[in-house]
Amino acid sequence: MMVTRMTTRVNMEHTKEIKTVHQFGRYELIGPVKLPLKIFKEKVSEFSIWYFAFPGGQYAALIKGNPSKVKKPLVRVESVCIWAHFFGSQYCDCGWQLEEAKRLIDEEGDGLIIFAFEQHGKAVGLRNHFIVYAEGQLRCHELVVDAYTSLGFDEDYRKHYGDVADILRHFELKSIRLMSNNPKRIALLKKAGIFVERVHHEVPLDPYNKIEMISKKVKLGHLLSLKKKGGQNDKTRCNKNRAGRLQQREV
Ligand SMILES: [Zn+2]
Image 1 (tube, rainbow, N blue to C red):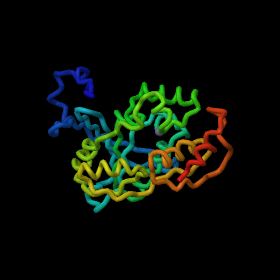
Image 2: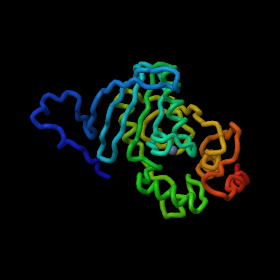
Image 3: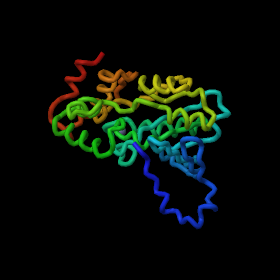
């Protein structure tokens, strides 16, 4: 997949004055951009953010403090999720995980969050992810595996973390504490040369996310405890009791 860059919008007369765009081997880097961010609606904390473009994908790296000075800084890798990150969907854990990662990194004072823009819907892409959700709900499938495979998609297209490893190395991070429950992501990052210590990062189970969370544990082997927060069953998207069927498969 080639990355399309909107370089034509830059007035060429001014390119010599542009100091924030750099080429490092196979990737382009733009930044830093200072960003004051809300942390769980309680406080505002100052972060900085960088743009990375590799031949196969675009990323943003959100940094707090100076993670390279820490022996094993906290790191989160986010596949961008329109449902949760943009709109606050409660079906997946992405929104909670991002907010909690920001809170924990702010608390420690140093850390990094990497956003992978081409990895929407486990890299199935934005358009296909809409199809997965729409058809998945119509067919009463859970939206983690069955909604993908019933349409002929792979359950996960993210096979390489070389770009993410290069971003970590750019910031001189070779050893990290990764907030993740996904053993495949951890294995792929280790394969890419990063020493990874896992930090459990699990959203409390509730009536809206429990079908997807149970699916992640049962079908994808995510390292989840599935602790409940309670509440009423979600009856907004499908009138079949899929949660009950999935509970029976729980290992
Ligand atoms: Zn999500």
